[in-house]
Image 1 (cartoon, helix red, strand yellow):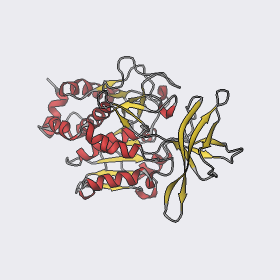
Image 2 (cartoon, rainbow, N blue to C red; image 1 turned 120 degrees about the horizontal axis):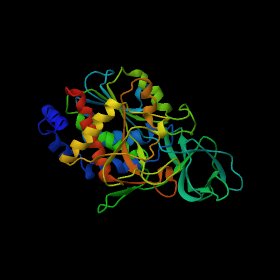
Image 3 (cartoon, helix red, strand yellow; image 1 turned 30 degrees about the horizontal axis):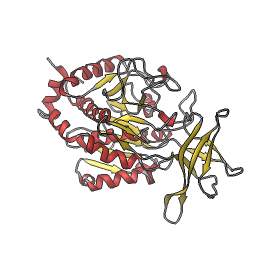
Image 4 (cartoon, helix red, strand yellow; image 1 turned 45 degrees about the vertical axis):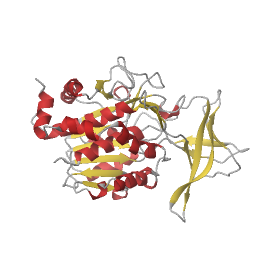
Amino acid sequence: MSLILDTLRQIDPNVFERLHANINEDRLYRYLKPIADTHAPTQTVRLTRAAVLEDLLREDGLLDHPNLEFDRDFKRTGNTVIRIGKNPYQKQAWLLGHLDQISYLVEPGVDGRYPLTPICYHLMEPGRRPAVALAYDIASRQYQLASRGEIYVAADDRQPYFLPSGTSALRPGMRVCFDSRLSWDRGSGEVRGSLDDAAAAASLIMAAIFLADYDVEVMVGLTDEEEGRGGSGTQSFCRGGARLLRYFEQPELVIGSDIHEAQEMYGGGGPERFKPGDGASFSEKSSAGVGEITPPHLYELQRQLSLELDSVGIQLRENLGGYVSRTETVNAILRTPNVALLGFLGANRHFQGDVESANIRDLVNLAKAIVCYTLLIKTPIW
């Protein structure tokens, strides 16, 4: 007997067939690539990646969907929100991920070398990585490329510097971020580029589009300013979500989605029994228990969900022994204990040793698992 699968089929007898038909690698990549390839330093999302997402939704006719509402800058909080359902502020589920990428403030330069102040968890190992400096243009009201170059970290000094490739003069107010172009190896499924957290955001968007055809109330929060300086508390990061959640009534479920470590990195390593390409990831806790913790009743439900989904071709793996960092749901745990951590395994988070990488098959599985988890709210099991 498949308790969860049978319950989900009561909502829609063809739900799994529809999932496989509508959420696939090609469709997810169509959203992921332009989002990942758009530079979005912290505090710029509404004018960068959110604008790209709005264009994608418009092209697919989804801005006219009667059950979907999109807002690039919700209530002027700087966060992008997709709302599914008819009740604008009473949402049964919050699905949270972030659209900003790690970035750096520019300090006055000396001899063509500009010291950088991280507004992120700076993990880059000694070496050089391609980077860009962005500046806000008042006339066009857009961010524009000010300079290409590299972020440089010396072997004997953790201080990052930006080295412009030309003669451009940089100044405070500009932002520096890593520069990459997403690639996809269709044979292995590996994707490489700026994936933290564009990859989970793409999965959440796929889930939202699918859920728009069901009678369920969902808020998808694609936040800005999730990235921030590391610290013992949470006030230095996830600032965007802190401004967002107060507008919504109490949810029944919150799912936070982000990159989960796939290999030995600063802070911890990958899980014991699976690797990128084996499926989406779920964890009981983040930051070794400092951050979000899923309550026992909810964790047992998602473990059972993962076991049953495997029989219908959806892979959701329990992350045992792996390190999962705090993410946007650190704000949600102050509202409800019903917080779940679903994500994807990725290597070189924050461009630690190379370009970030993951597997697109895991992102497809993540989107499908989020749909099933969310629909459970509508069933007697909940």
